[in-house]
Image 1 (tube, one colour):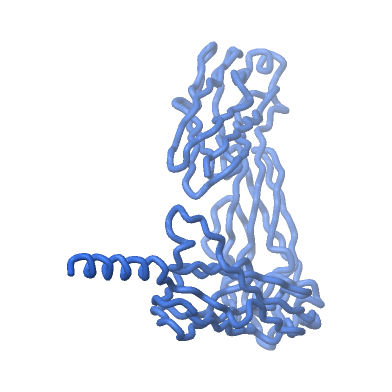
Image 2 (cartoon, one colour; image 1 turned 60 degrees about the vertical axis):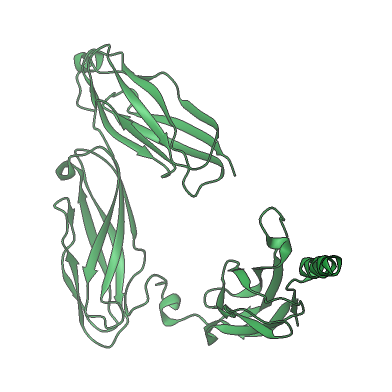
Amino acid sequence: MKKQLLSFVLFLSALSLFAQPAIQFESTTIDFGNVKEEGGKVSGKFEFTNTGDQDLLLSSVKPGCGCTAADYTKTAIAPGQKGFIIATYDPFNRPGSFNKNIKVTTNEPKFKEGANGSPYMIYIKGNVEKRPPSKYETAGYKNGIGNIRIKDNNLKFDLFSTESQSSNFLVMNFSEKESTFEPVNLPNYITLEKTTLKPGEEKELSLTYNAAKRGEIGVFKDVVNIQTQDSIEPRITLFVESAIKEDFSKLTPKQLQDAPKAFLDSLNIDFGKIDKNTNPTRQIQLYNKGKNPLIIRQLKSSTSVFSIASDITEIPKDGFSTLTITLSTRNRRGVQNATIEIVTNDPANPLLILNCKSDISQ
């Protein structure tokens, strides 16, 4: 009797080893054919069956760029039952052919930890027919979604710290109602006058940037908010970028002779191979080889992966400042590169470029 019971238990155990869920898609590709760019989102439904003998669960549904998984079966699918994944594609501003994938993993044994099973791939494809240009695009106004639009909302200034510069830009009222164009909460170094736009009117406006009033050296970005009476997008923005350089033109020969001189003991920082989820640091020294104090005007990294800080910002003659570079590995993998700008009051060499590199483990 005991032998029979043992045999039965072993039989059930053997069955459990072979019992498992299994997914079978009816089709792995949906072809939308030709779709109109202005026609709105298109969706397709992938259906599948659990051909195994245990409940099936979708553990991950990851669409590729431009595609979304609008909905899918989130509950257990019994053996022999069906499930679905709905894929959606937005054709707006995406003319031409497309082929997007969705990666699917389940609770099948091949996806268990350590099994390294490849995900199932399902696809949507088609061709987006380019829409005719809108009245805004025909007029060259591609920025924004409303009826009050700025033709180019990016203004750049390259000027000395003693200068004031102006830059012109075009704005147009595409609506049938008059509207004001009024800047909101401007900083004291930016000037932009309020104006009124008649229906269908295009105006050239001028924004003035006063670096002397700003009182800083380096590269800066400002966002200028503008209030209108547009019912669709009542507030629009101008993006202002300024590169402000110190004006050394009025220094006398004696002042130039006594000026500070910046010297960095290295122009390259290589963190090497770094484990993920750590924040290692490296240090270098910035020396003053001149006679007058060397002032650090700005420290600016090209990416948030690397940050920099100094222990002092005014370096005396023959002194130095310790610069600490920190690497943030959060959500980053592989080789990372960046440049760090060091702006000082050295008239001969006001900008030093520090090159940073790391290789963050996968």
